[in-house]
Length: 206
Image 1 (cartoon, rainbow, N blue to C red):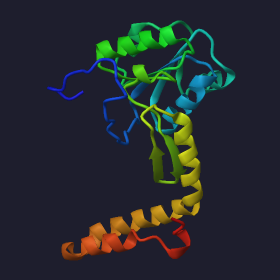
Image 2: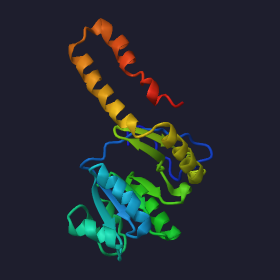
Image 3: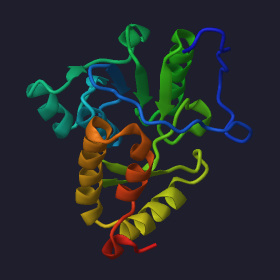
Image 4: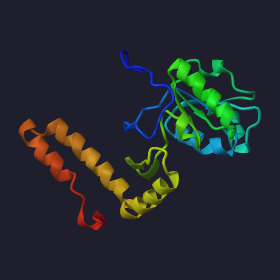
């Protein structure tokens, strides 16, 4: 956390705005407490971003054991200890036990580590948005924990509007942008960058 910014304690979703951002997790330690089915989707997302994942839980579902055996993550087959948070960038409490999840959140607060407690918005520093993935394009929807079901519904609507073909378009835009920034005169760059960002007619469903 930035110096000079007070640590807020328990988050009150009713009166605080959330700051949306995309974070690079590659090489950063992310701790998941809980090794059941609830944790699997969270772990999969962390692994896809290159995070160094540590999972803590006495028993693990088969998928998590497979990841551990393949060396994709570290599984500590025991109950959570605050020491598990050492050097962690963020933590996810996904044990299925509200009291345990709250304990994890409190331990994170004491160490200024970002924490998400699954299905417990009052003990979350951040929320998982519903995301549409189209290659490098990501469209995220959040209700600040008010209604994950609504966020999921909106995600489905956006998925219909932004089909798989958008992935190739965004990649082409990225390539052209790099070329423009490398070769075009500075006086023309702004105009050219706006032009390449206009999608072709066949993509305009909105």
